[in-house]
Length: 257
Length: 346
Image (cartoon, rainbow over all chains, first blue to last red; front, side, top):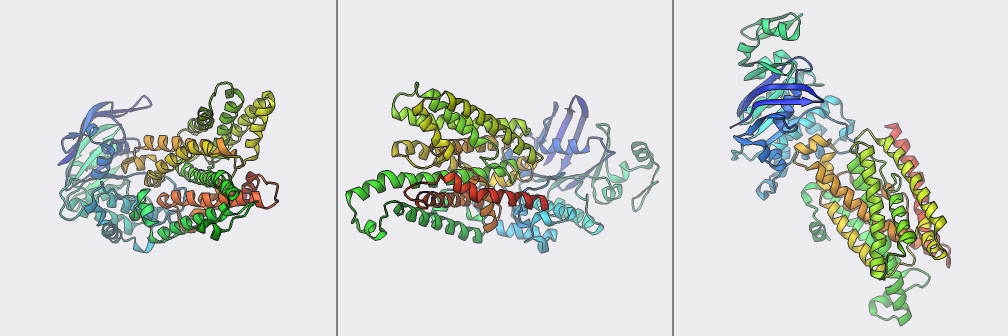
């Protein structure tokens, strides 16, 4: 079970954003995408999530071409968190979280709605925010709520084997140290429960610590992909980021100057 | 009443029990308003006599042929303006959207005026005529919403002031059009036209009411079916898409339903301002902002408010009548100012 793309190409405004990229997100696996600004990381994530149609190449969800999966079914299979927009009306935090609910019209799911919401709220530790007005929260708190919403979208009863995929674009932006680690621990838990996870991260140490695989992107091309200890090498990173990067092994520690 | 909510597609799962109770209060209130308005007027009818069937022929005619269509029309127009305001505010993600302010009503009025002045030679029978008028108004409303859509680049969230400015322009253009048509109209057409500029529920008859009734009920129900999608689009269009909303389909559905509801209303009652702005905000103040609650809430509060405003308009200075648009604007314009200051503060 995986989300896979085969030699995809993306052009936006006549500029080549992604060049001939093939990549696979397997279940129970966290794949982190790193690279400098403008490398095409977010575009790659959005393409795999089905937001953008590539001009060349194909995307497969569990060996089924994404074009054959309707948007309702996609919503049930994968959830996405990316840059967020302001919300015009005063929704409560609980309402925002509940927006993640995709019940697929199955009544056995609908019966477990309250349990699912409570489970997610508990898991994300946002119980104390739940009755507040969403627009009064800080940027970091809003991000945690959106994360909870993203998790609710992928909620399954414990006996379910439906594949699920989580796409997170810089999920730790605006988060303090505590919640940065907490959020990534939850992501890890979700992956262990069977989800395939794709992350765009800027912090190389977080990528090293939490990923099963790391992919490096630069200028729209896939430079390298593999286990963190195999990919995160000082020579390659120094070249990619054009600054001096030092990598120590056991445990993997990356320092830059 | 609860089963009524189920029938119109409100699943309890997406509204709180408090909102459920408030909705029921709204429904009850609009029923009471309807009853009171039906028996109040230049000729009062006692409810007790009505129930026991002890009424004379004249009272019966007044009630069935004059009072009832008028009160029903007021309720329908209030409901469609209220719910259209709520749906447009949701779709534009803009708390200041109102069919009147952004020019949709003006477009509808221009369409209707065109039909009255130029269409009188085309429309033969009364039946066709009574459909042609709403059709003209609906086309006008649809044209304006489409134009707004293009000019605000797909209802982008940034367009709060921009959209209102476009609305001012559209209102002015429609004003010019109506002005020219008024100028070239004959005396009898002019009589028909004054009907709009004032905004009134007087003079409505069953044959005129039925087409509008059908159009409004269909469009209101179609808006209610997409309540949850309107919630999801508040997160932004990409997010809504990722949550399984066919964004394009949603937009067309709202645009067409609003144009139909506002167009049908304007074709029968003229331009009545501020209801679409005031009602959704009032409903939000009572119980929250989610559209599963807001849309039906706005329909019922809009109906109650309009029935009451119309009742006041025909009873305050008897035997004369105040234009009902005057009453709604008197309530609505200060509210609009308050809203602007509130938005500025936050």
